[in-house]
Every structure is written in C-alpha cells, then in structure tokens.
Image (cartoon, rainbow, N blue to C red; front, top):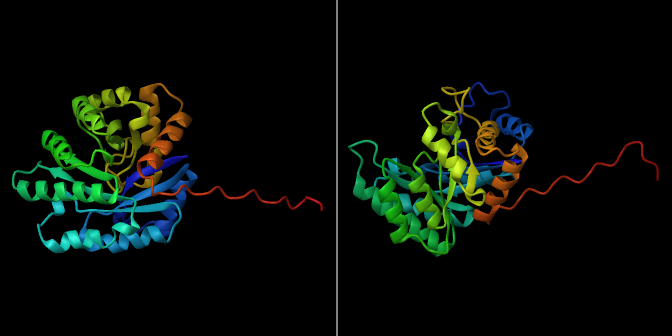
Amino acid sequence: MFIDSHCHLDKLDLSAREGGLEGALDDARAAGVSGFLCVGAEPTELADVVALAAERDDVWASAGIHPLAVTGDRSQREAVTAVLDQVVAIGETGLDFFKQDNDVDAQLADFAWHLEEGGRRGLPVIVHTRAARQATIATIRRHGAPDVAGVLHCFAEDWETAAAAMDLGYYVSISGIVTFRSAEALRDVVRRLPAERLLVETDAPWLSPAPHRGRPNEPMRVRRVAECVAELRGEPLEAIAEQTTENFFRLFSRAAPVAAAPPQSSSNSTS
C-alpha cells in the first residue's frame, strides 16, 4: 500500500468529478493508496484542511504558510498556531526565489519561524524549495531543531542538496517530476537515495506524472510515481510501497496507521 505524503485535497477541481472528493479518494484507495497527507499552505484555509482530515481515518493534515503566500502579517502565524494541536506536521513552508519580485527577507523570516515552532512542538517540517537550495539548507541548519526531522517535498534539486538535507535528518520526497523527460538529474538522485529516507507524493492537483502530464493530478497517481521509482532503483514495486509507508509513519509519527478491517464471516459458515 502507498501513502501520498503530500497532496492538497482542498485544491482538487471536483466540479466534473463523479463522487466529488470521496470519489477521488476511493479511486486512490482502489489503486492501493492507504493514506493521504493533506497539506495546508494558505492561512485562510487551514481550518478547512483540518476539518477535511478529521472526517476521515486515512487522511491527516499539516498547517503552514507557503513561501509565495507570506505577507508578514501576524495573523498568518496565528492561524497556523491555532491548529497545530490537530495536525501531524508544520508546513508547507520554505523558500521560493524563482521570481525576482519575491520578498526574500519575509520568506526567510517566516521559514525560520516554522522551523523553530516545529522544534518547540516536536512537529516535522514540510519544506518547499525552489531556486533557493543554498539558502534553504543554511536556514534549516541555523533554525531547525537537531532532534526534529522534516522533508524536502517535491524534490527537484541535485544530489548535493539531497545529501545536505539528509545530513540534517531530513527525508526526500519524490513527485511526478521524476517521470518528466527533463528530469535526468533527479532520476540520478532517486537511484542514489538511501531507502530509509525516501517518500513519494503527488502534490495534487499539480505535477501529474507522465503520461498524464498537463492534466489535473490526483492522489491515485502516487502509484505511478512509485512505479517509476521502483524501475529506477531496480526494486520490486511492493518493496517501494512498504519502505515508503514505513518511512512516512516514522517521520510523521503523529499519524496513526489505519487499522485493517476485520475479516468478514462467511455466510456459508455453520455454528
């Protein structure tokens, strides 16, 4: 069974989806997905994300401020702290310097706050990094708690970045980007990653893996990500499923595994 370690269920376009959100989750479950981490990234929507997870045994929530949503307004952090006792991780946070007009100072301050708050509360940190690899690692070194791990989600950087993150206790999560033609450097990272630091995700509704690239993504496609990872590493798909699920619950220790349903009594049995 697979865990989608990073998806945005509240962002899925369900307008034409039969069964709505439950239909999307049921299709994922049928594909072997046994759990979903719904990541909160916008302060005004965190209560909805937490409520969505509270209604389902196989969905967990996180809460944070995406770097591109940072305003510096105190109310944003207050929205995060208001729900931290109901989540399994803090984030999505991090740094995104891709556009030149980003407020670098505000992002750095907010990322440091998430790292420090995660350390105080013993919550793993979900990190977004784009065009900011050196600053990301430096900020984790300076503000992260040595005994509280985290994950570089939707990883698309080089081996040196992955190695530096793992030296700090972090995990590396692989998304559908690994299936893109332009992602050979990432595929090399996947081949080299220690099995005990590997996670898989969709980042749905974004980044659908090939051959679905360009279409809205859904959690069921985490299986395709895992298939690609298994092919690259020369390992059975079942081994990748087992290892990444074990890694998920080790990192996100507040997420309780869903208990297997008890066997059904046969209607033909006799007393």
